[in-house]
Length: 385
Figure 1 (cartoon, rainbow, N blue to C red):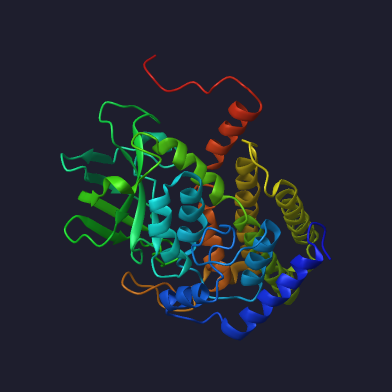
Figure 2 (cartoon, rainbow, N blue to C red):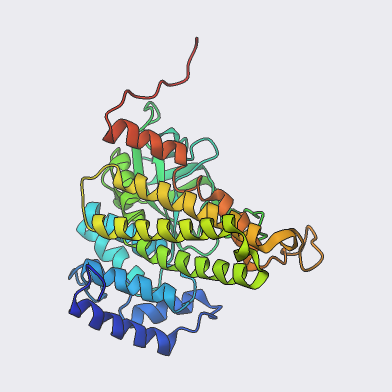
């Protein structure tokens, strides 16, 4: 039994492992149907408590167990994780009773999918610089206008939670509101996929042209968006990081196998780097277990992001080193119109280039730690000299 997990947790692990073995083969192409399968069996929203929203209850460590077993079995990629892991906890913390009753059961059942409208072309890591506006009309309805970018799964989502400026005279983190916006608004919302180096396009640009959001769907009240948005970012880096590390361990295992197969493991430098990756991954796990469930630690999410972002990027580089010159060659003809035929090593290397940027760049995370944890002087802002 691993430190931090009780006998009840291990019994829960056996139940989760058995259900996943019976239902998940990792090859499901209908992701919406898979969400409903999870919801029907009560596996969505384990940490929401007994709120009557259609989900079973589970302790924090049992949530970790479920997330780890899900990754370990190679279950299908989730399309509902944004609604479950981000919107759900945010509504529980800041939503009205009506908002919880309207949206949480639909997420728990796997019936409604969500995307996150935060980043903009001029406001990525600097989220307080958002320029998307939410103008309230005489009927109380908000009209949302602006552009969001790097919006994961927007092409599949039914709803989007949007951080927008509801006070046109406000600056920075003041005057922002957190709105729940339906995506089915032809002519008012346009989703454009962003094709990446890997040839995939799970990210999107989203353009809002007077999209409607109802007044009762503003979470935290008008002007309270910054507090809600920051709370959500804390949920984003919670239990899921431990499940992420299970996936990292499997990736590292494949790189080790590749090093043995290619003979690269005979290189002392390669061996040292493999051992370092293993040791750093163990440190990440123990740190995540140590801080699990803690609140009020302003630096913990930033430290975690710094640890895993750099680690995964270095793993991608190491995998290419182990692969050798063959890693620079594609298995087929690459064209502008067809998806790239990349193998796992190439895809991991290219995708991991963004690990130290998305979710808050390394530079921003270091600034947060310096200012909010260490109490160092605030970084000077740009301006006239």
